[in-house]
Image (cartoon, rainbow, N blue to C red; front, side, top):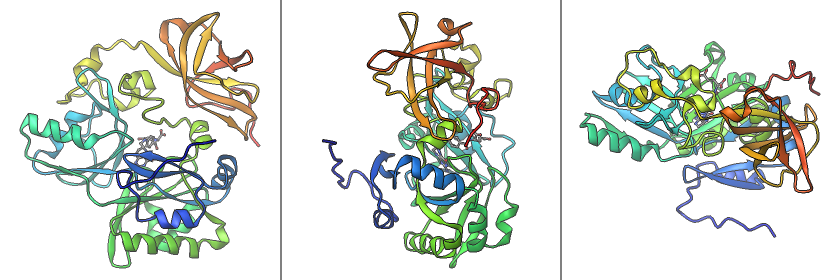
Length: 371
Ligand code: THG
């Protein structure tokens, strides 16, 4: 029997939970102490629908940690090794948060809302506590809190068409990782071109629960001919796209370099960041690589072996129905994988071989053509 999750008040529901349940959510996970749907019809069925049509996702659990006040820039820069000095209002930045040893705290999207006001749209760790601790310890003149904002993502190839129908043509002018304030029924909501898939789309930062439900209904009403459906971050799609999940692929024990996030660390910038000195001296010990296994395997354990020696572990994995291969991310000892092309994975009944590759997967260069 699969045990059930008892949902109490400690596991927060969202303004959309009743809608999500009316749509037949089959499994939840908990993210930032809040419900996050895991699948509806089935992970594979949800995947094809996401890649072909448009889905509405309740991603309320992507909580906002607001930093506001005269020292907001200082606190934000202290928290991330990515240079934020040139960020423009409305810009979204994928920005690792790191501690004084360069180890990761979270991998949020950072949004510059206005002068002296930022949102961290966080992954699944308690950034609020960390930010409050730093603000207090450094004596910064800022306020740190979690506003009532519940993001709704609209993702898929037809997402733009649907969002235009609800918010108007101007939405099309928003560039990737940019956002603007848009009116919905008299409320002003931040709408950005972003989301945890590579199928394109927008995220609407709903700031009124009642209007949020109205927005949900309107997206469904106006998108009927686009085959709009309910969805959620999809395991298959996000692995095929090379997106990281904090807690699995990146953790408190890894640095951004060990997660392939080098481009989001501004090593040469003159910034006051808690982690920058440690990261300048850092010598990575592990590396996150992709593994491609030719068969649909049942991974019995997470161990990754070279010869008989365990040299790493699988952090995420999925069958890819598009490429008909099994895909995994594996965190490996950097020294042990030097020069290797293949690793072994434990399948319970024996072992199988996985081809080592860079992330994100480059299917064309792997000789794989998708369905
Ligand atoms: N949207 C919002 N908040 C979030 C997520 C989101 N918080 C949690 C989690 N997702 C944060 N993690 C990621 C990881 C990758 C991306 C977004 C959020 C992403 N990356 C692009 C890429 O890898 O190509 C672009 C990065 C860039 O150019 O800066 O989209 O999904 N609101």
